[in-house]
Length: 189
Image (cartoon, rainbow, N blue to C red; front, side, top):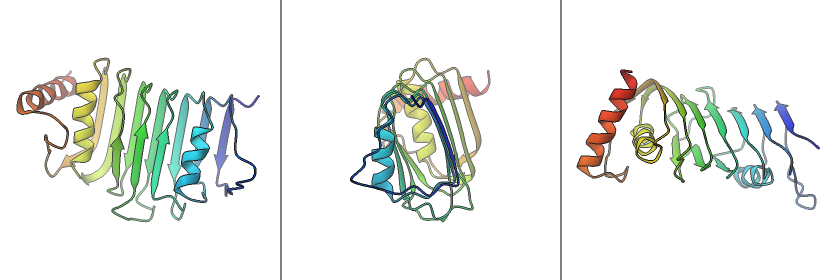
């Protein structure tokens, strides 16, 4: 039974007649892959029903606009997209992983990141946007603080927002002030 899979510079093909099934895979590293498209990535990851650790390094021309991670069992996720990747404002990550304990995001392209589920078990989050970023990273941090009482470590690197939209984060003014206080308290130790 395959438990660990590391792919580096591999071209993955979609063979609809032979669906992928990786029922025992717990660790997956995808480095500079070429995919058939967004839907393939969704199906591929959803076939990993006990996946706990996912490490993704997107590359230029990988054929994926929105890298979607919907894995209920996932505990550790690190996604990175370098400035060498093709720039497109419509590119980004969608994450639905309610069991996450660690989340790392490195994105110097200005793409988006949508967190679809609460992450009540998250203990550590590292976010590095590499330059001035959109407010969505800060919305993520606000939501993480609100929905993740176990968060112990938060590292923001080169994340300078143009503005923080508390309404888009689903927070009223008092909640927003509490979140900002908690973030500052975490950052200042």
